Image (cartoon, rainbow, N blue to C red; front, side):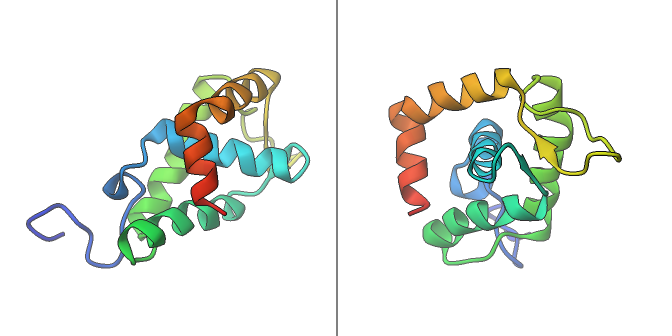
Length: 118
């Protein structure tokens, strides 16, 4: 890490201004795009797209770990995704998650982040 708190081997979402909530909502959008379920690997690309656009760098190993924490822990605690189920792999969005995603997607902030992914 350098004096500015930047990871030398890439950036986290937070380094480029994405809150944990932003990252969760982007992941929920991915889940919806793929019919209600998605694998963790599918979440890295959209976050990395924003990281690259804003910094010119890749999503760091720490950025990926943070994203896993946001989904595995925070999104589950908030009832946005179902807990991990070995018999039904992938992260599945809850009805509460769909409602939160819809509201976020219609907000100015949410729309602008989704446009940044285009």
